[in-house]
Image 1: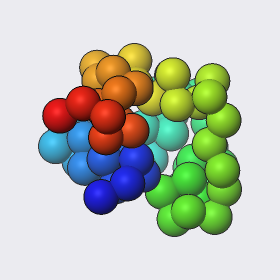
Image 2: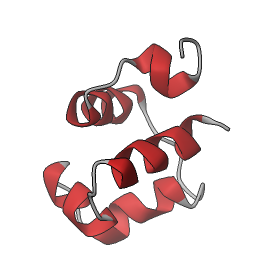
Image 3: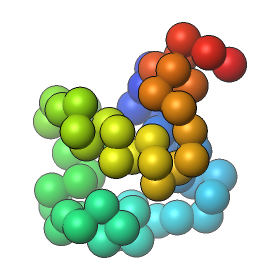
Length: 66
């Protein structure tokens, strides 16, 4: 499982759709969905924002800490 899988799993466990998550991030769904499809690289600022929204540390998302 990689960081994209962990983000998607955490989002789904919280019952948040891709569309809702996009809005929470201040993005259009067409901007966010390529991250989960691995068609767009995520920068550090986006990762930090996602970690905050999902209430997970970067270590948890990156698989460095279970």
